[in-house]
Length: 360
Image 1 (cartoon, rainbow, N blue to C red):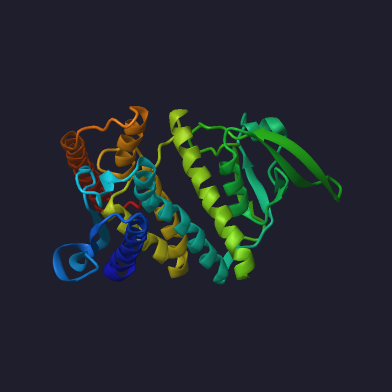
Image 2: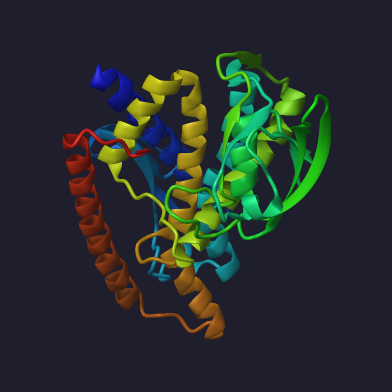
């Protein structure tokens, strides 16, 4: 069961995400007439391959993604090499992998919205208000029905939680409906700060939310016309949430969770077990965004590290770093990345042995 629920969907997602990433490099390299030496599915050793128009297309034994090997990534001696191209072309080729991983989530989220899914029935209510919290200072009370936040209608507790996290560091305007003693209701507006570093066990505003009818769920499904804009919005929201978590870390909050292949495979199994196969589209979209962000960071060996060398060349008015020195930097970077992956995998295994999930 672990193989079916964790390994297979994890490998499928990983292969898909990496192939899409490498496809970005492949397409832009071909457009700019950079020689593609090999485009491989999986990693060596090679199982089978054929050559067409100077490019070796291979299928390899390790089914963990794919790769594109370009001519002369550091050496400009050949006119068809990547390094021989103008700086702007090299930047596009190097950034196109992450670019594809930024575009893919829009498609994945859109497809997910087109599939019928069960969502909680609202309205969202405030279950707990922590004493001394921004919510308490704003006059919010347990039992208040949350109508909207910053003018956006809230359908259920999921909407409320996401909207609060999207606006961390800002003052949030709650529009709530409150039962009045003796009968009737009143609509109240209150402003509360969404803190970067709330006390342990409290949310940014200091409230805990629930749905008024937790036992009921409804089917939600969108047409293609509505799903695409929602896919775009979900992608932007995911990037904003990632940014906010990093900022929260520098304000003293909890840092982003780090996991390697073992941890992500386990998390994939948890997603399938708890929410079903359809939610893998959302999970894959989030992984694609993470892959894009990590690859664009200015770290040696990654796309962002190579981009940094091109930008340095531009700053130095065309003066390049010697190819052998750049290659050495990337080699050291590769060694550090492998070391980091081994350490992360060790802690992933320890987490599994202890029976803990990445989401705990």
